[in-house]
Length: 198
Length: 290
Image (cartoon, rainbow over all chains, first blue to last red; front, side, top):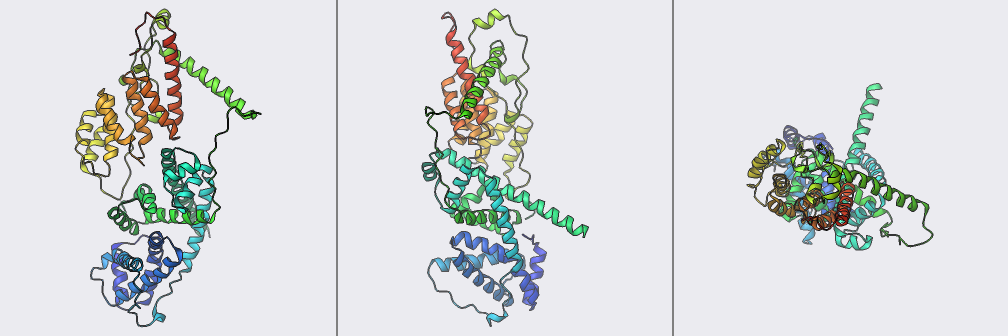
C-alpha cells in the first residue's frame, strides 16, 4: 500500500487535467486497491464490488480530465465521495447512467496486474496467520467475518460465554492483523536484501 | 497520514466490518482508513481473512467439555490432576507464610499488573502468633497501579485532559490523575480508559466506593479491551473491603474471559479459598474475618 503525499496528489491531478495518460495509470494503481476494499466491505458482494469499481475509476478519471476537482489536495476524499455516491445509487436501485467519458477505449487499464500479484501474496500470508490461530479462535472469527453472526449466537453455537466470545474475537483479530503485518515486514526486508545483493 | 500506526483499524476495524459502528463513526473511520496506509493494510487483512474463511468449511465445533466422570480417564488427565494438586500444595506453602505478614500491598511500590512482585516482608512474628490470628482478606489485596503504556501514535488526537491525566498517572500522582481524568466528557473515545485508570487510582488511594463505581463502568461495558483488568481490580477492591465472596465472584468472571490474567486470577482465587479454610479452622475465640 503506497503512501501518497498531498504534493503527489496535486501533481497527479494537474497531470491528468493536462492529458497525461501515464498519470491516469498511476491514479489507477494508487486508488483501485483502496476503492476495492471500501466497495467490498459496503456491498459484501465481490461481483457487485467489481462492477462498481470500474465505474468509480472511470468516473473519477473523467471528472479529473474535465478539471472538476478544484482542490487537488483533496483527491482521496474526492474519490471516496464518488465511490459513496455510486454505492448509494446502487442501493437505491438507480440504474447506472453511462459515464461522461468520450470512449471506453480511452480508459487506462483497470486490471492492475501488480495488484493481483500482491493480493495473491496477501492471501497466502492471511492463510498462514489463520492457521496459527487456535481452533476456537478460528471458529469465532469465521462465524463473525464470514457468517456475520453476533457474539451471542456464536456463544450458543460454541457453548461459550458471550463475553468470552467478545474478548477472544478482539484478541484473535489483533493477533491476525499483527501476524500478517509481521510476516509482510519480514518478506519486504528479505526482498530488499535480495535486491541489494543482486 | 504519517501520525498513525494502524491502531484505529485494530480498535474499530472489526466493528466496521460487523456493521456495529454508528453511521457517522463508520463514515469517519472509512475516511481515515482510505487515506491511511497502515489502517488500510489492516482492513485489507480483515477483508482477505473474511474471504478465506468463507471458502473454508465451517469449523464451528462446540467446545465441548468432557464429562469428568467418564471412564476410561485419559492418562493426560491424571497428570493434570497431579499437577493441580501440586500447584495447590505449593500455593498453600506460599500462602502460609503470608499469615504472618501484616503488610498490605497498598504500601508497596507500584508495579504493573503483569509484573507485580510480592512486597518485601517484614520480620515474621513468633510462630505461635501465626497459628492464632486469622488472616484478613484485605491482606491478599493487590492494590498496585496497573502499568499504562502510552500509545505510540494514533490517528485521532487525544483529548488534552486525558493526556494530562495519564501523564500524572505515569508519575504515580493519583490525585492529579483523578482530577484531570474526571474532567473528560463521557462521550470521549478514551472515556472508558480514563475510568479504568481513575478507578485504579481510587483503589490505590483507598477510596473503594469510588474505585468500584469507576471500574464497573469498564467491567460492565461490552467489547471493552480493559474489561478483564477491570474485573481483576474489582476483585482486589472487594478483598480490600474484606469481602472474599465478592472477590471470588469477580475472579471467576476474570477467569471466564480466558485472557492474560486468567492464571493470575485462578491462583488468587485458590489463595482466597485456602485462607477461608484456614480461618474457619481457627478456634472460635478469634473474631470473624470481617
